[in-house]
Image 1 (cartoon, rainbow, N blue to C red):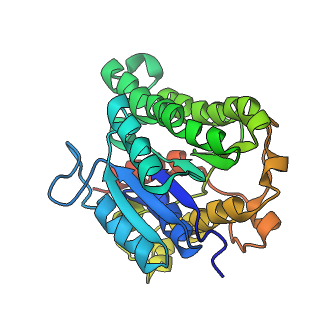
Image 2 (tube, rainbow, N blue to C red):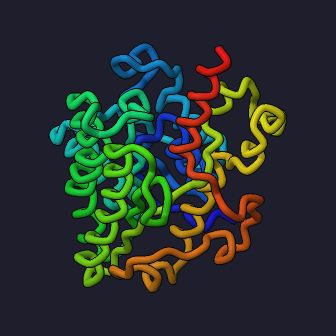
Image 3 (cartoon, rainbow, N blue to C red):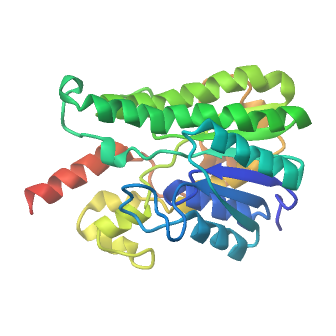
Length: 295
């Protein structure tokens, strides 16, 4: 079954990690997925240390059963974002699902420092990359949903509780997109468009697999280095969660400006081995600190 066949999605930040997992699982459910980001074959994003590209993601979407379309877009540049959604409108005439997964803050996060000692340029750049891009993307993407009177906006964040994430600009960025989903839900309610925030647990991203020296095939071996790694999640887990949300006709009843969360694994029958998900950002810092201690 492909419950999203005929549906059109844009995944902003589909290059790797959760964005790639979400794009692929929307494709598995039959959607046509525009995969946007800055890294394409032969032209990785400036300073990028990762080899993944949106071209690969789009090919994976198609392999999973959907239609993947890569569109190089810098989501901090309004004209490029406007052009992305103008293309979607021209080619498809509609938009059903908008996923904001833009981040780009890993290399900017200075773990272990109080905020008054942080590099201010990095602090401000993180907010520009991780918050401003989401605002810009929604500004140009949401009108397509409003015009047809239906759709889903998903903000990808880190954590679903009001606890501190261990670094002030990181915490601010991740909390801000949750509040963005809340505010959008309030204003979109009369238009039958749902907005909500979704957080993966300890994401087993390409970077984390590399950090632990494992692959997706033997990832459990990473637990011999750090027991908590056994609670990690493939990016396809949050991908299937978003696909289930997009296919659920009753999702709007769970949004509409209600500030809260519910357990996706309970709601949709997913199995999950980590009852209390470790906070990925804080754990990431601990892993790096441990590696430095033992270098």
